[in-house]
Length: 307
Image (cartoon, rainbow, N blue to C red; front, top):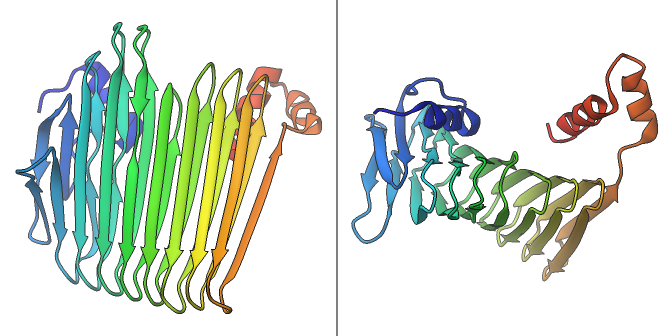
């Protein structure tokens, strides 16, 4: 794999990689597979009917990881990629994804990724996905990630998803279905600035007794950017669901938060909390008395909020 300085920087931003990782991985660069490695426990197979890969994790696989980052450094490149994860029973794995776009040209660059997870009985998955954009060109940086999750009995998934800057327009969709005693945690973070627009739609359907979900959304809208967050939880069994949407609004930013709760079972317990506000003046003053400028103080508060 030969990557230039820009591509290496993108890989560092979205996957925290300075070199090829240990274990299974597939690195996609400018629409092509740039590097791949499989192991005895984890196989990665190129799809034959559409762009993307199948990641097959054998039952009983423990303490293993898979890296599947995507980087785009060509202006005007647009792609739609389908990645399916088949995770056997009794697994404990970490999956690191994410996409970085550097666009220094005049045409829009776009990555639409559809990730589907089929998690077997009693398996545990930690999923980390970061999105990042940069570049000085007039072309936009566009990302539209879709995540589909099916959790079998006793399975659990911890999703850490973030848009850490530089994306002009995005629609982030997550749909999950939970079986008996399954558990899902989603921690989603978005930062927008300039004229950027970000919309996040998350919907969790709990169909099994003892299932539960915890969704936490944090957003910061700066300058003239717009954020929309829609969180829906549906309880169709004796289950529990919690959603929390906290946002900081700055400058002329706009934030719209919409809760949607639906219960069809008398033993479903669903809670939604939402708050939108500005950075407290006393926070800035305290930090500025320590020698920080107002801009540095704001950045520190935002970093802590989105951590």
